[in-house]
Image (cartoon, rainbow, N blue to C red; front, side, top):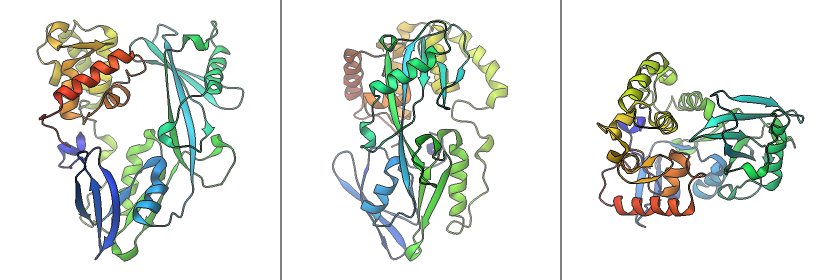
Amino acid sequence: MDAVNRGATIMTRRKVISAERVKGLWQVVIQNDDGTSELIKAKVLVNAAGPWVSDVLQTITNVTSKKTLRLVKGSHILTPRLYSHDRAYIFQNTDGRIIFTIPYVNDTTLIGTTDEPFDGEPQDAAISEAEINYLCQSVSEYFQKPLSPDAIVGSFSGVRPLYDELGTDEASAVTRDYAFDIDTANAAPILSVYGGKLTTYRRLAEHALDQLSDVFPQMSKAWTKTASLPGGEGGYAAWERREKELKARYAFLSEDVFQRMVAAHGGNITVFLKDAQSCDDLGDHFGHGLYATEVNHMLEHEFVRTAEDLLLRRTKLGSLMTDDQWRRVQRYIDAHLPGRAHAA
């Protein structure tokens, strides 16, 4: 969203078919979501494909990867709220790893995470029974009331693309730092990113651009360290006052729904809540505090195209929704997507 505001073109759900160097430029063929193809020319490619970074190099660009990637699966579980306050706990586990519990969306607690070697397809990652037992047993070591797998209301898993600098057999010992691999053949660079974490994404991005400074000599100096995300303008110093104002303005929202909305959108909740006086003003209710007016906002401004986009990657409500609620959300998206103005 911030990139769009600064002039970038965001093209979601496009598949890269091929990329080749021609006369000092990259020529990239992409397939649009309607099946048509188009050609894009660029001075530089940045390959930030996460667990697929090596695959993109070798199968799309025919560039040989110089670094080794290690895939490690991490899984989380969701339970009903385990305690009433809003603090997180970090527990030292007997195997030397740490486990955390964090107050999460809509009266739940998020528990994670595991660290297992992974050699399958990243999109197929899912929690195992062993991981469930591991997390439950770890938390039970510390809480007065043991945690049973029967209490779990949802789970999700992801694959970490870690830079395997040492070639160790221990998944937990692989570095969480990042590394770059830049290939400059024929004066058309491709920069590949290995590793990295969400918590250091801004530093990684700035460092990546440093690698390309010779290609873009007019580039400005790094500036994102103190920049606010959309909806968070003013930073922490202004947010406490702003949150109180929003809470008073939309007092009809329950505490859980309000907190989820401001965590996701910050001050931008005014863009879709507008002058609403009650939940009746927010349109269809899909469950767990998700209303049509917020869905419309994400269709228009946040590149949502499917229920999976909205429930797993935007609102984090997917694990709480029933199959019927998932279907209702998808039907609504299908009915309202055509003709909508959007940035992608």
